[in-house]
Image (cartoon, rainbow, N blue to C red):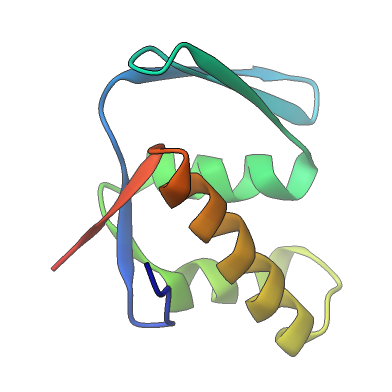
Amino acid sequence: MIITPNTRVQIRKGQSSSVLGTETIILNYDLGNYYELNEMGSFIWSLLQANQVISVAEIKGRMLEEFDVDESVCQEELTSFLESLFHEKLIETTA
């Protein structure tokens, strides 16, 4: 899956998450896997939870407002993170 700024993503059904301090734990019931997200991953996950569908560009914009990060680094890291979530069947793309 190629993630672009125009890609719209949403959380897939079949998982639960819980915030522990600045980290988030996600349990994927279908696969029986759990994931631990750091502060930035938790921020992205909270945006996904708050919005039924959100574009990668919207997520990037919110991250640039929230964190002191270079725009190109933000785009690369965000794309890589979302591709990982997609690969692990935690998110899906929408039309």
